[in-house]
Length: 337
Image 1 (cartoon, rainbow, N blue to C red):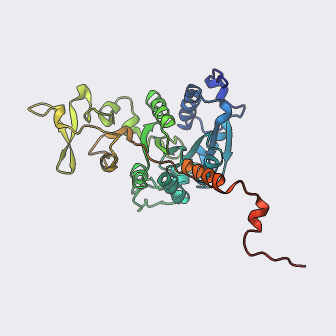
Image 2: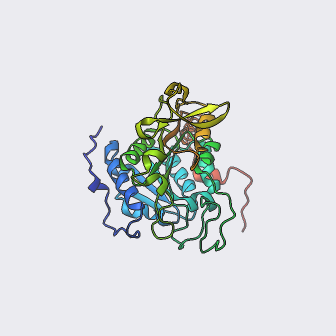
C-alpha cells in the first residue's frame, strides 16, 4: 500500500487561462471543486473529468487531472465506458442544462437508470451561453431570447424530477455562490457509491443575469431558500416561523404558531426507498413555495459498472481468458482469395 500525498487546491489548478466571462458563476463552481477534490483522499491521477459542449464543458482544461472534452450531450456515454473499463477511477461529468437535457437527454437518463458510479455536475443557467443566448430546456415559459423573440412557449424541464423519474440514487440541488453548501453537497456526492446528480443553479451574467436572484440574493434568501436536512422538519424563514405540511397529498405553506408546530410539518427523509417524497419536494417551486436546496434522495442500489465487471470476471473464470483472434473466428467466417 502507498500513502496518498497531501494535496491542496493548488494541486488541482491547471496552467490554462480560465476563459469564462468575468463574473460567471462557473468560477465559483470551479473553486469549490478544486477545494473539495484534495479532501477526498484520492490520488490526483485517479480523477477524470468528462464534459460535453458548452461553457461548463471547459471544466477539464482548468483542473489538473485527466479529462476528456467530448461531443455534445455524450459525456455520460464516454464516462460510463471509462468507469466500466477502469472502475478504480473517480469519474466526474461537467455538463450544462442544454448539453445534458437537450441533445444529451437520452444519455443522461440511462446513466442514472443504470446507476453507473459517476458524479454529474449539471450547471443550470436556463440559457445557451456558449452560442450566445438562445433559450434552453430549462428556460421559463415566456422567456425572450434570440431564438424566441416573442417569448418561449415551451414548458421547461424540471431537472430533479427528471433525474428522480430515471431512478437516480443520489439527487441534490445547490447554488454557485452558496460555497459552504456547494462544497458539502460535492462531498456528499463523492461519498455516494452510485450515480450522483447535482443540479447547480449557476448565473450567466451576460445572457441571463440574475436568473436565480430570488434565491441567491443575500437579503431575500432566508425567506426563499428551504434547506433539506435529513430527519428534520421542513421549516425556514426568519426565526424558522414557516413550514411545509401535507394536506392529503398536497403540500401547503403554514405559519408556525396558534397551535401549529414543527411537529405538524413534513419531516425530511432523504433515504426513503420510494422517490415519491423527493419528487414531491422537486415540485416545490416559487413563488408559492421556497426553493428546496440540499440532498433530495440518497439510497443504495446495485451499480451497473460493478455488475458488468463482475460478470466478465465470472465468465473469464469459467471459460478462461480469450483472445481477439478467437473472437473473430468464433462464428461463420470465410476467406476471400
